[in-house]
Image 1 (cartoon, rainbow, N blue to C red):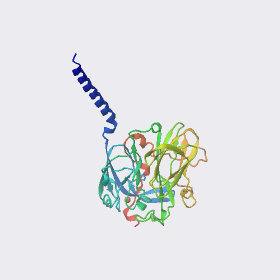
Image 2: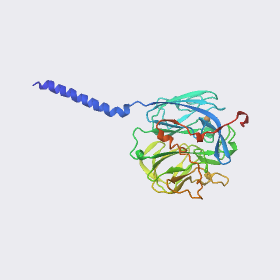
Image 3: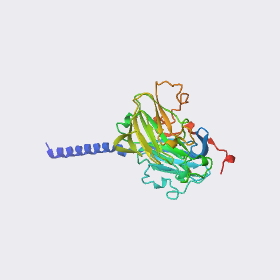
Image 4: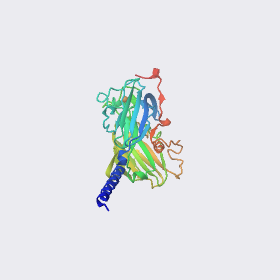
Length: 356
Ligand SMILES: [Cu+2]
């Protein structure tokens, strides 16, 4: 028997096994991201924010919030943006680090020239960070983002979700924002430090135009709350414990409970809630003046409505026409892509009637 030859072939086999298992372990990181290509327009439309209050906005694909963009960590994303409005804009992908793609960061005068009326620009980046991200204009942000609705959600699923995340049965995306009625129809004005916001909303609707969240006992809801406007919204949920799991898309090392969540401008909070207390429970902004000024109840308010709880005749939303996708809950179940909601669409503004 030639032990020398045998030992040599044994060593070669071992090396092959080691190399194979190494390559196998690398698979998750080596996998290529999917190519995702989307088109967004920016349009001038009027949206109904609160009873008796309409705002002229710069709307992505004609709607506020803008369409949901749902992709996976590591995807290669291309977005063609066309500006159909009368003022310049850009799109900043808030939370994307733009690794090797800084010219897609969307900051006028720093990474690009603003997209002029009638012009287009293409953004290309890899989703280098997972989480509840978003996109918004970066031109005259005090007006375009704060009071003209130039924002939408960008959800980047992690390659390795936690065990808790895997139990989620319903996603709820809430974008809180501010409005200034004196400038609501005056493009190019508003948002100065001395200006005072006087309407407040979730997904661009003030109560009672906002929507309930319908759930059943045993559901696990993930709330993704965004500060899309210019004020802090103290979001307080009744009847349940909210586990704070992610800040600005980053997973917390030690998640903890909060009953009032301070969602400031630009911030995102992911909260996971076990729906274990059947009934009807309000979820509202605890800043009292955000219930809209002028004495009318309104602002960022929703209600968790459990399946099986009867509509009492005195319930404020007993006759509500329900939109199950108001918080993009249905769209989030559809996998990856871009999803709009016709109920967020504004009405086109006639050129001749536009106030300057
Ligand atoms: Cu803009």
